[in-house]
Length: 478
Image 1: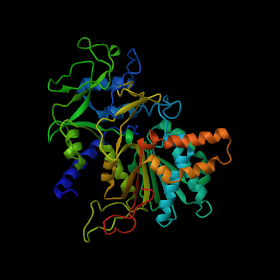
Image 2: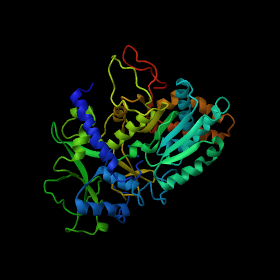
Image 3: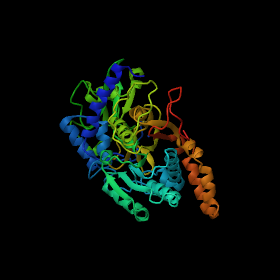
Image 4: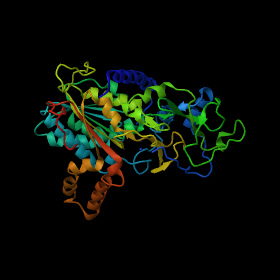
């Protein structure tokens, strides 16, 4: 338990980090170790539009944070990876493929979990669905299909609203087309939002899913230089020497040597064009992120840490969206912080992503054509991702909702009955189709791949009373 002083310090840090997280330009932010990979090309590729923007910024004001680098690469309004309609992004033609695109069973079991929580809450008369970073809309389409099919007779018109948090116009167009059949079938309203802040409170039971959303939120990279002090590691240009002689330059995020010729070499001749640089002085980010979690205090000097205040803030927003009631305190006549949670109908949610229940310092990586490449490879044309610190998300949501897990994706799917569902699906299929269904399910549960790389964190609005151990009742399958 945090002391009162530590609690106040953390809250002050959260307040300052919230401004950091929300003051950045409203680019889209929606991917798992900081590894060193060689460039995928022999000759230096041309300077990309995003690359030039970042190089110009560094030339004018100095090294930029990894948060700025990541956000600009992924979410620049016109040239960002998720914003440019020229990028296929998802599926076999894109740079990665997601679980819902592999098998419909994934979305079906997510929907079954939602319905189980709805029943546990007393089967409220209205529900609404919320998804963060819906991609192509495949997951939401599968969830809507299952919920409407299973409740059509007993609870017709149960689904009232669908809210999608998506800033990419190109992806919105794909989602509109994917969900069009269900809009007519269910008659429910479908709304798109740039941010969670725009989703209103509602008396409806809210079901939230965030699949591969948190792994692509911007992060700050900090390094502990002694027992008490942290410094920020930033992205610097590899084209020119660093202006501040006190700035310690680290090796590039690549096995490729960068040897600038002269003071101002031709950018086309140098690759990679960025390198890491340790800030000579504390920054707002290094001060604020270092106290975001008490877990960071015991890390040894020299430790690298990837911290995403945006992830902390988004997780807290999600909890607020669901937090219609407070748990009964373990000690009577005590209060929990933030008693001004807006009234709503409660709900449940799932966060499914790369990561684990711990912090990471070496997980930043890039994807291109389904392969991991250098994180400085063709900025704006590659997907970027970091592992999600699920413990930080639980800490962010802690006093507003009850969190469950995380479980590995494999454990979650097995406990939710994937074998039973696959067996039913394959009964009337041809041998070729049957094999495809089974292979897809096995890929989702692969113990050397997606089955363990992905984790599933559940969260629910508080129901029931605490037991003698101070804990709330468990929620299946966690």
